[in-house]
Image (tube, rainbow, N blue to C red):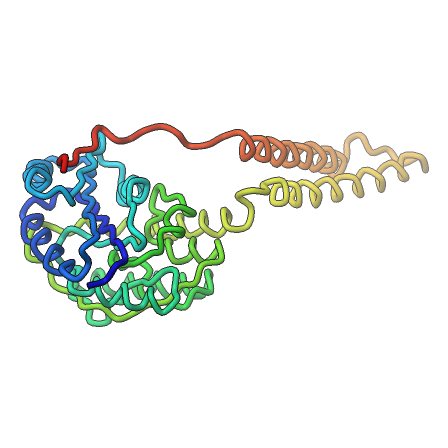
Amino acid sequence: MIKQSLSIVIPVYNEDESISALYSEVKNSLESFPSHEIIFINDGSFDNSLYKITTIVEQDSAVTLIDLYSNFGKADALNEGFKVATGDIIITMDADLQDDPAEISNLVSKINEGWDVVSGWKVDRQDPISKRWPSKLFNAVMRFVTKVKIHDFNCGLKAYRQKVVKAIDLYGGMHRYTPALAAQKGFSVTEIPVNHRSRKFGVTKYGGSRIFHGFYDLLTVMFLGKYLTRPLHFFGSIGLVLLSAGFAINVYLTVGWFNGIWIGNRPIFFLGILLLIVGIQFFSMGLIGELITKTAHRNESIVLRKYKKEQ
């Protein structure tokens, strides 16, 4: 028996046909982990997912249901699960049965080698080519941009040490970038090959627009990683360049004016003034950003209820 405590975090959106089988497989995979919990996050499902999960919760005190007000997306669902997870190691997986719960022990073993984050790699991915090729392109770009050398950023099957999930904040489409976000915080990241299965029930939530949304979120990750706590460095640098250019233009025109050259109707005069104004605005944006980062924090609740059977 392994003494480490595990939290299995599973976001659910319209997967009622998979939930019972998924629960059974997860429980079987946790036999060697006596200290464990399973956290289902119902992300605004409109099928029978909520009923299926509630039935499981009533039978097993190790299962917790977090029911969200609406469909907020996978990142927010995972974030709510991370907030309540108490395990030494947190495992995430999708609810569609394509992630194999039998891989849990392999993920834990890799964590115990000293890694902070272990990401699954679907080497033999059981998805149509319309999903595989865009994913290959996306992952290649991610490796190049983030310098995190893993092959499958979007694999739902991952393992984290408790300290990692408490250090990262997920929203929007950021669930794709947890390895990159963790690496930015200084945590060690690796991957292992995992078994991937074809979808048995329901329909995929993947759409063509996700590849574009993914690249937009990548830009966000890059920006936040460098400038989240120091926006003045970003906006101030742009403002400084614009101010310098505007100042140089106006010095040049002022010298000409002293030499009797009329400058009032020259386009370069208006360009110099415009650059000064825009430069000041960028500096102001940076200062406002600094104030926001010092005072603002996200505290709105998206949880409708939390349900757990009393032991």
